[in-house]
Length: 273
Image 1 (cartoon, helix red, strand yellow):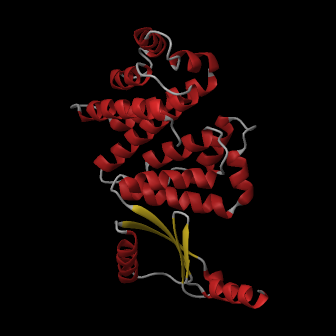
Image 2 (cartoon, helix red, strand yellow; image 1 turned 30 degrees about the horizontal axis):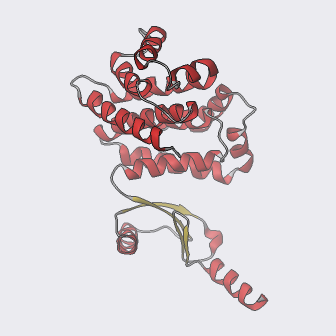
Image 3 (cartoon, helix red, strand yellow; image 1 turned 90 degrees about the vertical axis):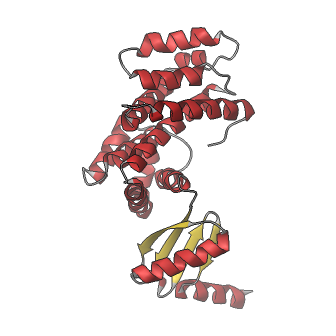
């Protein structure tokens, strides 16, 4: 998510309000997250409303009244308090405001997973879903198709994951394919994996291995990567026997290819050069 200066400031204020709201006794982070994401859907559909709530030249209190008049009784008071913070500040563009509400909703859901001790589970389930989608180019295209309706893509995601995942995983996976943006569905789900990992100040390492890694091997690899990158690293390991032997590790844009296939390809390039 790329935000300009005004939007970054507005989001920072809204994040502080979200933290306050979720810290209140009796607050349900999962419900607040789902409600905020439902507002994202509304703003994505209603161009006029999106522009009105992001109009920095209008009275902030009037923008708050507009949102409350539309959503009172449809979303909870905690969610409305967060939305007051959103529309009461100046954003660089309507699109960035919607991106900000989406970020708040996702963070509320991840807070719910963290509070229930299931953040690792959600992170791993999102990784597994991304790998399934990544291995099926037609599925990836279908889930990212900007012509197909959001509901049709969500139905397709529901068919893929059924009820085998945590409720937070289900909501996040369905929501991420509902908003058409340039990158493929697998890439967008991987962004959620990184968001979950970042909550514990960890980097994400995508590991492709020719053989199953033991718990000891995973621990050793995580420790080596921690030393390289200077911070804890969350490992997400996928088995792929086609690489012959060894590992391929991707952290951000950096790839460490220690596989037999990678070494052969490197030799071919040297011979061709």
